[in-house]
Length: 96
Image (cartoon, rainbow, N blue to C red; front, side, top):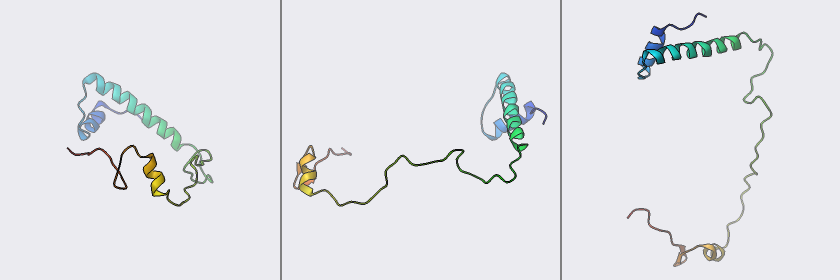
């Protein structure tokens, strides 16, 4: 593909409400052209018979299983709270 023209880049900049100087237009033109060339080279890769995948490597979770368990006893929870009032944990007010 031929490189993008300054007019194409200016049009995209207008659509995205981005203001570019002439130097920035030229820089974006060459950068966007290079990006498009990379994608075109990817289109030439033969992927026939390759199943789609979400990850390029085996993905596994490092998190433990979320197994439901019983609640802690109220007195144990309240014993660890910094401030307790009438069987409740007392917190600072959020709104003054």
